[in-house]
Each structure stands twice: as C-alpha cells, then as structure tokens.
Amino acid sequence: MSNISPFSPAGNSFIITVGVANQQTPILLTGSANANISSGMPTQIRFFNAGSSAVWVTMSVTSGVAAVIPSAGTTTMGTPQPVIFIEPGVDLIFTIPCGFTPIAQAGAAPINGFYLNTISAVAAQPLWCLLGEGA
Image (tube, rainbow, N blue to C red):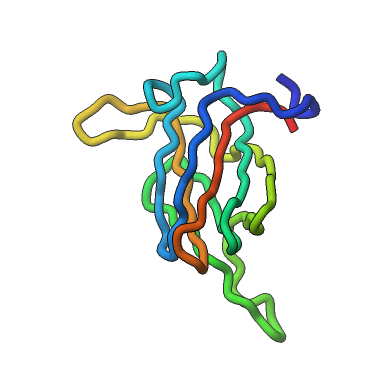
C-alpha cells in the first residue's frame, strides 16, 4: 500500500496507559496479541492522545531504550531527545522507523515486533494506538 493512500488499519487497536517514568511496551505483530494484522507488516502507527498532558514516544527494536522528555532551554536548545511528542487530543500517524526484527521472549521463541517507549509529565495518560498503512 502506498503512503499517499488514506490510512488503512492493519491490526487490532490497543491502548497504552503512559506513566511518569519511562516504560517499554513490546508491540507484537504476529500471534494472538494482534491477530488481525493484514498481509505483510504495517509501516505506520496511528496515535491518539486521549489524556490531558503531552506524551513522548520513541520506537526501537531493542530493549532498554528510554523515552525521555526534553529539557527546556532559555539561551540554548536545552537537552534535545530523540522522541516524538503527541499533544492532548491530537491524532497523528507516524512511519515506524525501526523496521521489524525478532524480539526475544524469555522462555519462548522470538516474535516479530518492536518496542514502544513512552513517558509523560502526568501519570495515567491513555495513548490509543492502531497499526496500519497510508497517510
């Protein structure tokens, strides 16, 4: 599917409750966790921030990657971080930049997927997510 086509869902919707500490959520692209994935692997993810505070997100194929809120600066850029931000009430579509590689699971065979790393300045921010393709 072309990225200039309208967004088309390619899996189940899910919600992540974002906290004030970095959390890493494995996003499974095969198996019962996302049984409705269409043929091939999705290239985009649609986010809707249903909370009252900004949510900061990064995606990775390895564990241990942290989402960090950038520090503001006055006469400098502050401390930039490699994250995307989603304001409250905003619905955005992003390309999944990290590709798809096997994620190791303790005591089980590796699965296809990636990690969604999130953080917010306010606890319990619901981040609605939907895998798909198109813009």
